Amino acid sequence: MNNDDPYLELIDEQWPNIVMMYEAFGVKKPIIEFNVADNKIYSYPAIDYVQALSSPARDRTMIQYKEATRNNRFILFVKDAIHQKLRSYTFDLPSNQE
Image 1 (tube, helix red, strand yellow):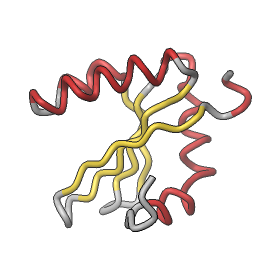
Image 2: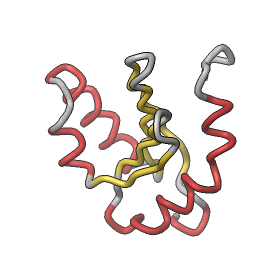
Image 3: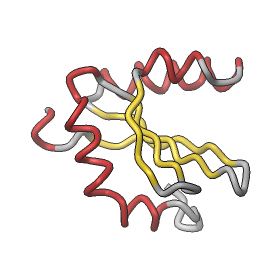
């Protein structure tokens, strides 16, 4: 990851909440979204989330999702409406989900 990434500090601050949200729905292998504007974390069914993306992003995200689930990882999106950014990250599953 890039040390200049403006979202890494926010992810770090929210990490316990991100993990809690993933663990609540982990058996469904969700995509987690941290919405910067409303400072909330959401869990979405992966297929529904991917289908809502634009076509190029949909293809990339589906590849990323399949690779993540194959490798015991999950996808976190950071949605920043103020700066019109939607950035994805892949993280290892919380330890009790492996």
